[in-house]
Length: 192
Image (spheres, rainbow, N blue to C red):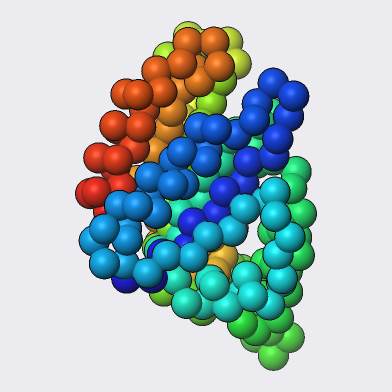
């Protein structure tokens, strides 16, 4: 299996990205230990747009490590998506949005060319009980997948299939890093 791991962490004064780096490293070690090929991309390093498209074409599985910031992805990964995925929309990753001027009746988002899978690995400052509970003020019963729904749609747009999302909660105010890494290892073991 060919595995692409994208570390979307954007360093902030209060968050150096140690957990995201540890999770990327752990996923890489597990995959290589099982004989899989691994390529990585980090938002803290320069990247080449065509090389990133080629990595997506090569990958059977894409793991995206996302520290959720302001209810979404870090700005540097949004920039990556705007650059890499927009370029890939020109025929490499999909045939536009699937419709054409000759046939605008085709479903929007049906032009994806990828047959790979993806896994979103999320880290939150929010505690787990903030989700899936209609009595919670902010998320009002919504799940982590509801919150990150636009990311799921981005990958579906390219024809990719989701694997169950992984989430680590309360990583700043009540960190349980050791148990989070054990759960992450188990999660990765199940999908590889």
